[in-house]
Structures are given as structure tokens and as C-alpha cells.
Image (tube, rainbow, N blue to C red; front, side, top):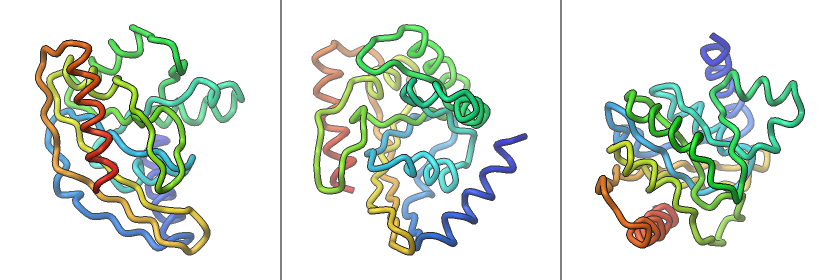
Length: 186
């Protein structure tokens, strides 16, 4: 219920504050899929949630965001799940895979942290690993913005990327780098 109220508010607010351009939204597949995007700002999940909200999106978010209880309760109600950075948490992976297998959507930022426009980072392997385990495509999304008031925010949705269901750790690492390169190139 909260999500149904927040999404239109977020979309309206972002349209008032920014010049928003979204391309490729028609590429979002039916069924479950994983959104993998570059990460510029705390605004990124707001834009992804507001403009790519064909379905409920579960966001994987750093656990520090949940420490301030009122904010943690809000983002939990909106579908965020805490992740401890630098720690492999099998329960988060399993829950995310279950969500994906249930024809729903998970979003994460493979860089693992915010990276300024024009900079790059070596991706984490979670996006490819989870999509492979769930047997769902990855939808690459590129955000180009500085998030200054009245500036342009461009969100580009790329073609869904299929990943094999059985991959070695090295193959997952290679595919993760390919995915991040694709995201940056959009």
C-alpha cells in the first residue's frame, strides 16, 4: 500500500525537480528479471523505482541505511533488503533468487558503492551470480545525471542479457565485467 502511494509521489517530485528522460523502457521483459545499474547517488533507487516500476522492485541496499530506524522502516516498507558490504550473505542471495524465481524484480548496483559520472569500478559478482541461479535475464540500466536541481537525468534501459545457469566463479567474474562495461556504454 505504501509503495502505491510513494511511486506516484516520487515520479511527480522528480519531474518537478529534474528534466527526466527515460529510454528503452519497452525492453523490460515479462517474468522475473534483475536490474543492474551504475550507481551515482542516493537518488538512483528513487528514479529506478519511480520510472521502471512495471512491477515491485526489491532493492539490495547497504545495511548502514537501516541503522536510523525510521528511515530503515521506510525503505523496508518500500522493498529494500539490507546487505552487509564485503560479506557474502547466503540468505540474501537465496532470498533474492527466490524473489526472481517468483517472476519479480531485484535491483542492485554491481559497483557496490556510488561512483561519480565518468569514473568506473570493478563490479561485484552478485548480479550475475543471482541471475544465473534464478535463470532470469539481467536488464542493464545506465543513469547519467549530476542530480542538481533542474538538471537533466537520463536513464537508459538496455537489452536484457541472458546468463547461463551453470557458471564457474571465473566465468561469473568475466561476465560481471562484461555487464558493467555494457552498463557504462549505454
